[in-house]
Image (cartoon, rainbow, N blue to C red; front, top):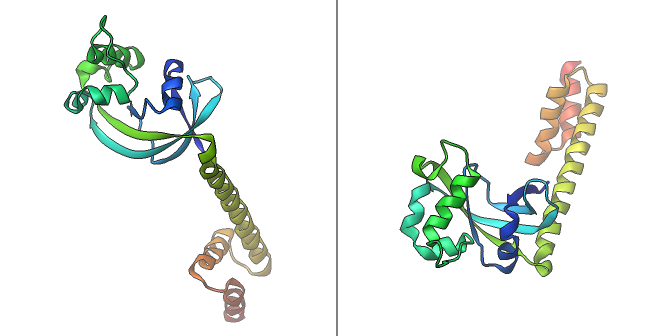
Amino acid sequence: MIKKITFNPTVIGMVKSGVKTITRRVIRKEKGIYYFTAGRTGKKEGYIEITRVVKERLQDIGLWGNDELIKEGFQDLSEMPIMRSFIWTWNSLNKPGYRWTDNPKIYRMEFRYLKDEENWTVKDQIDNNKLLEERRKKLKDLAMQITRMLPISLIDAINLVAQVHSGIDVMEMVKKYAEGKK
């Protein structure tokens, strides 16, 4: 299942245009494909792939320079310096304990927007997840059949079925197990 990540509605256009390619979050997201929404309750806007995750202190952003802030989706406007704009936005989105002056540990995530012609990657991941679910169901069904054939628990049967991934013939193991119980 593809997980969700939210962006402020004001930056959706920057994500889609490839201007915003970095986000910082208090909660870690793993590398992989996510669908994104405009805000927590917004509709699905598209897909991104998180390609790199680095744990750092929030104020380390100053070490990266203005280019980093631009990749975060901030613009250098004359009425408010770019760093001050980032700090103000960060503080407005995060609770006490995670504010700029607290300098919390955060996760810097680099990502890329998956354009329509790249959505085959997303479709492949969805198809792969469906196949995994089908395989899990088949393995559980096989384990249930084994419990009907042998006096063993479902957990033992599942462990037996798990041997399939090791290349062992499960039915051969069942026969040997049954012969040993006689």
